[in-house]
Image 1: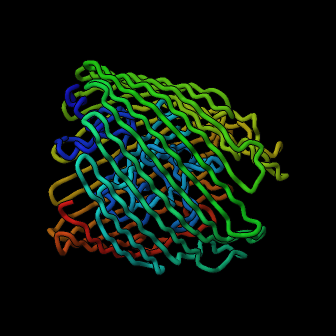
Image 2: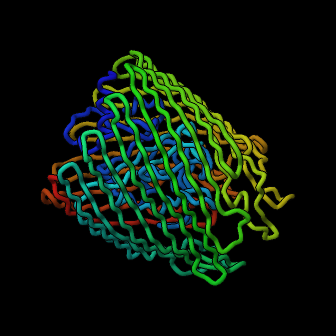
Image 3: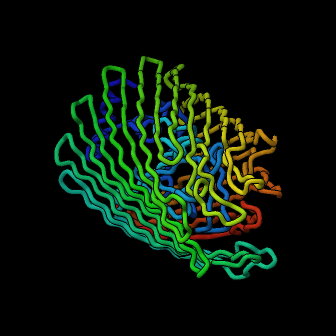
Length: 596
């Protein structure tokens, strides 16, 4: 890619309203490098899910969609809306950073983002970067980064109904005007669910789920050099679960998840861009019972980034700040902390060679200072075959639970904890020809100072080490009437202290999806395999689940879609002691202007 094309891509990112008027042969991604690049220039393993992909696949929810990606394993405590964990390349579920329109979203007490509460109907695009990205994003990007972009200009109405008395509604209106656009959408979903725990002593009723969501997104360019943009995504939900048969307690939780962002992109010169972004995220969980707990995280954040380009060299410098504040009915010793990070990245485009180097320093008032770095080299063997090698360090910040949880006898926080630290290396090779694409990557990650519970001190300690080695193979095939995608992940996630495999981490993951267009009809089938894995004292067996779908566009603006998940009604457990949904059918009817 020439520097001229790179400059054009950067200009489009700084002024998104002009993108529709320009022609680009490859999509530009912003998550891997915090600047717009094509996938092969990121020198990282990246997966992209577009709105078109979501409409074609019609997955149940966001975790169901992400489970099809290489290196991703999803474990959930039952069905829709239940607590869900994402394990990316064998790392812990709280070692993957989740962003919504650039805003960090996660509970500062639990440590992970509520993926099960992010509505698919409000998503325009998802970028998943596998591998450490702490050099650019700071804490928690050990396994990688998942960034979600909300929908813009999404005029539509969608109705859905399916198994277990499931119902959905989504509607949106988008308008473009001189130098800007604005979009507002809202919707909801409800289901009676099923009994997620059938063990003796547990509740025998179905565990339902209900959620309501709203999204607002706007952009305005008052001049050719300045673009203002903002977005809001909010989801309110209630989820039922089985109370503990021995301890009792609540059996329903109310959740609020919200991400608000505003930003200004300014082209100082044709070779110098600046972006100022502000954001606020909320993660609120409230158990409906007199003895239930409430945990609320409010995160304010700000970043200033500047990018300069001179010939074939790009220099990026930035400052990130965020403040976590926790509100709870429990008495935390500390309830607020600030983090300030400074980062720099240099990129060179030298003919067939691409080079990257980055460095970041974070200062957190709770656990001190941390420095991370990364480097990568890419080489184009031919026009269609490219390779890269990379190395980087990362860290995960201790949560408020880790540091300050009140002493309840059998557990208390440990304010002396250090961050978990990792070192990773990766080598990748990819190519394409005649509608067929392939990619192969090998990765190695070592994590030190893992935080685990110590039964002798009754608190968490930095006591463990982990080593994760693995390889990923991806295949894609596209013809006018056919599309196929396959992924295989082989990994060895090992606890170095015990020699045992890390909890809930399979050694083998595989997925296959085939789609066929038949004029107004579209047919598809998918198969997903998860290998055996340990879960506490149990060993869960491997499983394979298949799904089928059919879509029919009976008018330019109208389409009908039928999806069947777990088509062969396979019984399996994703988490020990929790049941999963059997065969599930869902039908949607969508009106969307074809000219949109």
